[in-house]
Length: 156
Image (cartoon, rainbow, N blue to C red; front, side):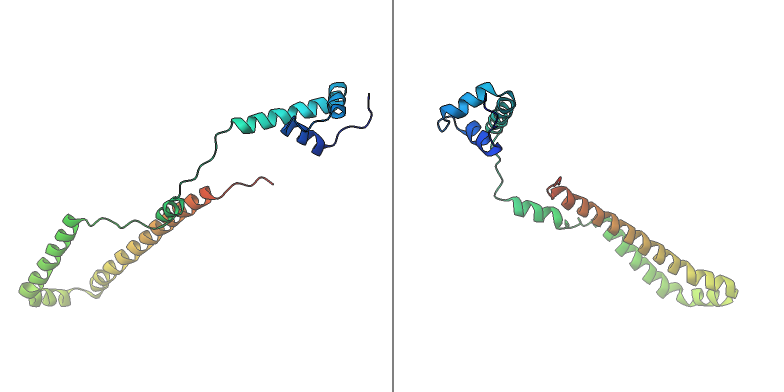
């Protein structure tokens, strides 16, 4: 029995192709248990690799990724748009017809109520702005998660 073992490179070359094997190397593999186990492992790895399906990539992969990253156009909600337009028109007509009475009524209110009516729309606008920012951040986090899932995972 030979006390010098085959190198990893020699064992891999032997496992890759049997036509380049020499009689001396095969005799060593048949007598040395450690080299035989490594040789059989390399053969198993090679046969497993050959059994794997061949990876194919879609030529439109870049377009697919760009489509995922680009925000989609929001659909137009015609009913909401029509309702808002009619509501705005109704407010304008009411302001023209009842404007003077409304101003006289508003002037008669105590100062605290006037401040309340002035601050109410500002607070509603602030709340809507904050909610819009939260929704925007959630959408951006979703996009970031999608792009992170496309990154190859490297286990170093």
